[in-house]
Length: 371
Ligand SMILES: CC(=O)SCCNC(=O)CCNC(=O)[C@H](O)C(C)(C)COP(=O)(O)OP(=O)(O)OC[C@H]1O[C@@H](n2cnc3c(N)ncnc32)[C@H](O)[C@@H]1OP(=O)(O)O
Ligand SMILES: O=C([O-])CC(=O)C(=O)O
Image 1 (tube, helix red, strand yellow):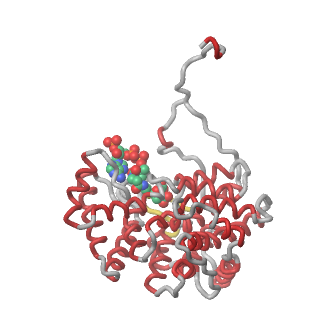
Image 2 (cartoon, rainbow, N blue to C red; image 1 turned 90 degrees about the vertical axis):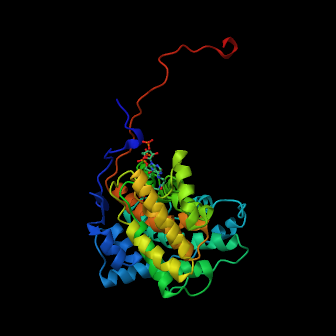
Image 3 (cartoon, rainbow, N blue to C red; image 1 turned 60 degrees about the vertical axis):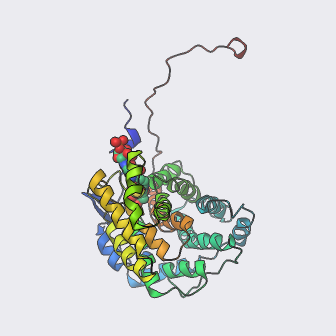
């Protein structure tokens, strides 16, 4: 038995949801470029869960179901107020809150297909409300109830800020949601599948996935990118900052990928959005710093930017707090996690690989007083 470090190149399951072949990303066969330009996030949710694009009637039904399920149980909102809310990271709060949503769902442990689908709707619908409620409560503000007349992207921005979002912000946020929705067997999705393959429940699967997404080598990288941009501060400082990091063998957040070699196809969309939005908000330096970082890291390390790199300046331009960047990733990626959870249940087998043992050989137990 020989271990493959980080399971690189190991094919661990079959899946019909998304694929990465020759650096091209598709959801159910639809190219991400096409979806990013044309699809609403609700359409993508439907696509991932049903493996086909919805008709207008099916889409309207899903939108209605999401709108009907956005409101949070009051116990969950109240429990936010008991967290050390100004100190905890929002991803830790989200992980705990999603777990606690399961406590207030009477169907949490009902394993029938229809019940699992209903739970998926509830969880998808409540994720933006959780993030927005947390963000407001920690600022001493009251959470804002979702509005049934708004779509998914607009509702999140509305609940976060308490005002009608403008069309440009809604369009940009919708595109970011589409781009982040699914990504084959990334670490958090694999985590979700491993968890539910024990026939554990949907809430456990998503809670586990949030824990995996939180790390800076995965979803947590987008917040770290923003931290880097803030530390650099101006275009003049980029070269010395990046060179120092590279000389110290430190990673540049938002670059590199386990699967993509030539580049992450999502990054160009976020790059375009970053240019447009930073100009609109009068902070073009965030885009200018970013393209200079990309120049250096690509030419000197051969590493292209991944989805997390330009999403940082995009979310910053949308006026979103920097530590909410990864929770926002989760608001989108939960659609993919749920698709994979439903797919895992549909054709389940326990996921239990082996470890190559590298510890000592057989030893004889020595009683504690003789050691
Ligand atoms: C949504 C997402 O999860 S996208 C990924 C988000 N994560 C990041 O942006 C964090 C920064 N990037 C990384 O840490 C990595 O590129 C990962 C985690 C994405 C992929 O990791 P792996 O496939 O395991 O590659 P690994 O970490 O082994 O790197 C291979 C080599 O490239 C280097 N490298 C990889 N990424 C970077 C980086 N961002 N900056 C500098 N060097 C890097 C490594 O130091 C290593 O060099 P070495 O062979 O000289 O030791
Ligand atoms: O696929 C991965 O390893 C990470 C990634 O880009 C994602 O989850 O979107």
